[in-house]
View 1 (cartoon, rainbow over the protein chains, first blue to last red):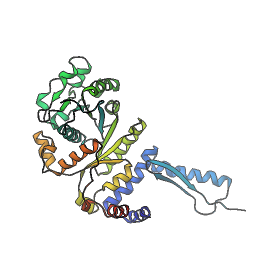
View 2: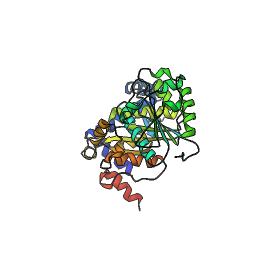
View 3: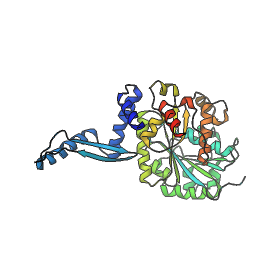
View 4: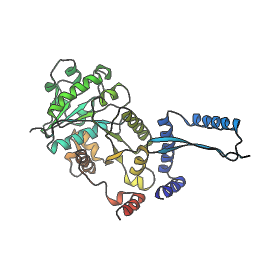
Length: 83
Length: 269
């Protein structure tokens, strides 16, 4: 609950400290994975395209990196259309 | 005085970015431990850009350096500089006219195993960067202290260093945050301790406030811990106690952020 509230407040944070935190979150995730924001965007598109080639996507697909401590995982959520 | 522990510990102080306070941390934590009666040696591995002798005010007492020891021009004992203010503190100086490639990680390991016989703590002042100097500095270390400032570029470099230490199988990596200004944290213009912990995900060993008396002590070549009036002095003494494994409370209640206070209220129930 506290973490959730913290995230909500951080998202609204317009202070320079808040900006520093948001920039660091992104850059550290990319540094640790040895990738960049541009590569991530391109990969996201490719992943969605591969799925779309074989199945019909229904709604907004999401591909994002989630972090737990110093570890990261890719979270892919692609809604599919049933017959 | 005799050493207190059977086997000495090697602690590397590192940061990635230069100018965050590695040498100041080494000088003051080591002096503080020596004052508590532990046998301590500080080893400057910033070969070519040495600073530790100057920060400790021992620059006029240097005769030999670490490269001369390794190349057999003098003995290890001859090169050690004794600090007259702290009878238990010694320094092994860096060479100024040589470079980082003139020594190898194996040679540093060899030196440290010699020093472990006579000292309780061996502090290694690591150069900035992630190249040969960094590899030399971490080779023999049992523990690592990562120093950073509450500033994006220093945090990014600290994160890279922590990743490299983890790859090198370090199990004991602790964080020292230097030059924090609580007034700026409160006004939302400086990263807080909580922010840094969230980004770097390692245990906190110490928090050193921005303190003008550090500049004064450095000008004089005196460790800050000799100035009892200084807030940085208290912080470095606390780090020394925590290095020994003692529990020392972190900064006062009003210095903490709202979130920490709320969290503490819940956890104390």
